[in-house]
Length: 381
Image (cartoon, rainbow, N blue to C red; front, side):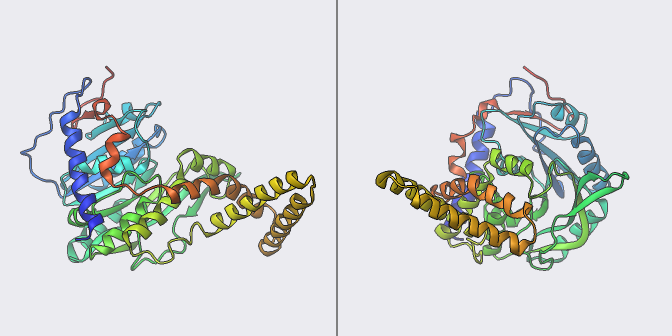
């Protein structure tokens, strides 16, 4: 077992045990029965302000796993709407992360996993509805292949409806390899043994935790597969390549995670081909911005606009080439905006020192986490 896997595996257990010991649930008494039979499946659902989707999500899980042995753990990231209230009406365990915590999907999946016991662990986002046909296929695939560590399926995002009331869908995975994908998205199922050997989700990554976990699962000797069966219906807030989605990613510090992933790959020799592919253009654009800043300083020093104008001419030329190749102005305008505001975040993430789950307790105050056992309601102190 490599050093990263050992450290992640060890610290995941330490952080989870620390949570169980230090948590003082002033609101709800935790009454889980440690002696109850281990379920076949554990479903971890992460939410943040999902009152519009959480009921459909939970109902799809309960219906999809009907007749099977399963448990559900919902981890809520400081929702300010009725998400927890709605979820408490279902037979699920609820973990509420406080506003002071580092709130991101990796943290939610990390803590949710620590509360599970099943042989197979399904991670599902709260804005997704599970398709029951996928459950049977996933169960069969994981049981039939000892070397299969994780499985997912196709997913279509519902973007709303057109003027005629017809739903508009977006294929989530148009270019992925279904037979041997290098990683699975946030909604995916894994064998517990694969997660234990790989170390589970790294909660210190702001994004790209799926790619990093996928690399560690493969490094631990497992394969992954995406079934040709629709796994879920996703209800994304925004379409891709929109200003609204860009702002959402900036708020959740997604672009910092892009840089963090590259640093993790380089530091721990994870098996990811071309790890800088997702940030190459950000780095190039950051270099161009640096040249622009130097041109401004030079212009001030020599009392001339010439350096800045030369730089602007070069940038406008690049924009023109991009527009000519894409055949439109919207796409280059969007990406020039994204690279301008996101490139510094990517570089910052690249410079961050990689950390495993041992550092999680610095960002989260466990005594403010609330837990509810299955079938109980979450109350406010």
